[in-house]
Image 1 (cartoon, rainbow, N blue to C red):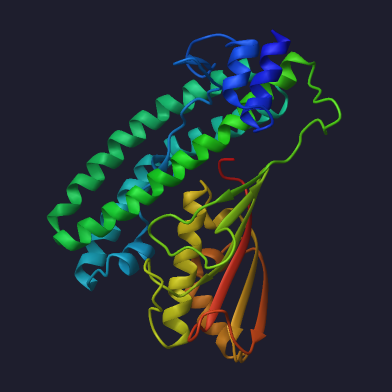
Image 2 (cartoon, rainbow, N blue to C red; image 1 turned 30 degrees about the horizontal axis):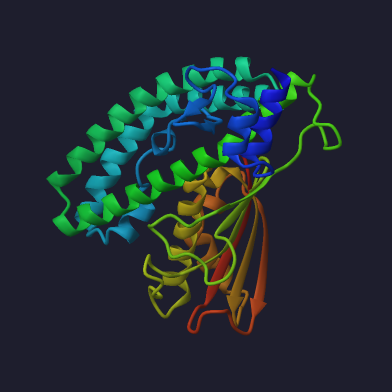
Length: 324
């Protein structure tokens, strides 16, 4: 048992090819979330967790920007979104709590206990997904065809990000099995090693020209500087306010793709071209979701220029939480 689980961990981390692991050690059990043999290939499996439904639909601020809503449409969207979020908040809070307990059990190497909480999260996720599907199907009542397509593009990006997180989870679950089979020890490695995982930008925002859009190390999430650009990488305006609103919206999109929210942000670094103290009022207004109650540590830096011609602001963040 220990030999096959060790092979599973080595396969998941890339040290040993998965085919070799299957040939040498075979599967270590069947059933949901336990891995097994698929077409002669070892498949260490992490259980499938809910995706975007845990954080909810596109929030009102970003919907207005990404979908280019009119004032009337924005008011209609806000009414529906606020009602949806209030109604589903208890379920999403419960799911967040169950995920925290799941992660604690994984850190302890107790895979079986973690699976208990997985089942509870999955049940909550089914109900949340059904409700969100109804919310999204109702959007055609006041959105145009182009706006609906843009919303679907955002949703596709969120689903893609969720799938990337699921693939990254393979390592954590294989590690939990390995640690559980070896009394919580990983040999020469630390008892709770941190794995760096690069995250891609969701479809709703443009990815960086250099480096990863975000990197997760354990429970910490590091997001690269977000510019005031649309999903195609074009600047949204030539003034600080317009670019700041979009930069903060893009940061929120990256957080949501990683299963986090603005309230999980612990530090912000804001670069402003030709910064003046009067610009603080613009930053406060644009970053209300981040700079309101219980704000993070904020560093504002004046700079001569940024990597993109015409860009006036770059906002990067560090967050703690979300779904590893």
